[in-house]
Image (tube, rainbow, N blue to C red):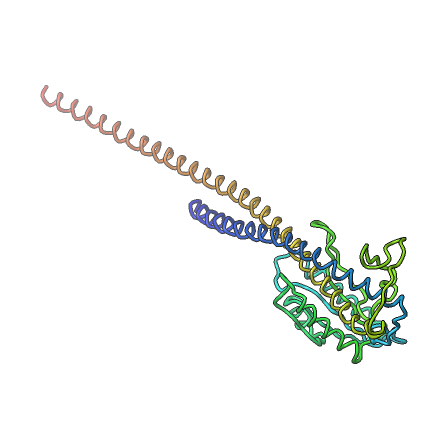
Length: 326
């Protein structure tokens, strides 16, 4: 029985060791991808800042375009949610956090009598909301690891279509990347665009008025209203692209932490099982030694009795023989 338990423990230890190698490799892969994801976030930021700066200058130049993305609704009857999640799991609570936050927001809107539509990015989001019979207007998948600007354009186009055809507000649900150890779920307004955010933004040294500095002079051709109308969709795409890049970096950071925790847990479990196996092996060895010693003692006792009986028989027969001769 002990040897059978030892074989079972050996198989479990080998299985855990193989799993630990996989989680360690996934941890290293995620760590390397975080660096690239952070670089992409930094590379995309100048474009977003420049678009924001140009739109701010257009607005200050009198470009008050009557664009749907700038219209504040008088009443909100339906809200669209753009949910950015991952295509894969094994990243801790990254997916569940953003999905459940969206679910709570939908429930809060339903309590106020508002309807909803969903635009989903990521296989996990699609599976989650399909399984629960939510109404899905559009779904995208296959690019959460390395999203491109074209992917963001597709999602933004679906969200814009909903906004222009029945939804008075579009909310963006994603995971903001603050640092390697700090990410947070955010559900922020996406459409209509916040004009206060445009006017309060800091365009930077080359984009117009920096904080506390004089505004640069621009001459726009064609009219600012025409340019603003063409740039507002690009601004929405840039915002969404920045969000999916941050979500991608957050996914890799969450997966790196989850795989590190899995690797550490596998090492602890392997250590504990090794101790149990050694204890079982020692118990088996001790049992075998005791069986051998007990058998030897029993054998020696049995052999000693036979020798004594044989000696008595020999002595009796010898005495009888001497008597017969006398």
